[in-house]
Length: 107
Image 1: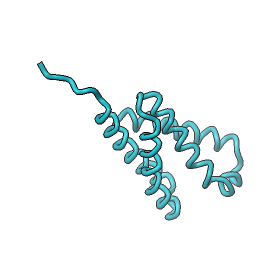
Image 2: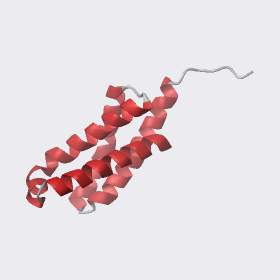
Image 3: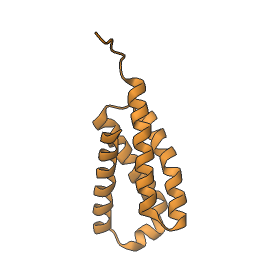
């Protein structure tokens, strides 16, 4: 869970900084509805790759975690929503990793 949070947060921060430097504010006003979820999904795929998680389940978790973030964006607290979404996504990834981990016998 903690590793998923760290990888996702690093990805979101990195992409946000690069896009903010490369593109004007007007781009985000016009295309933020598409670029934000696209960047979020790309970061989720990176997280899945780094942590060896199933891609489709990880993307599903990213989509579900993004719903409360959408509410935060509408309320005008975009970055608070992103933090909350990262926490929810990390919990999802922890559950997915726990479910796909092989059972070991204690000796």
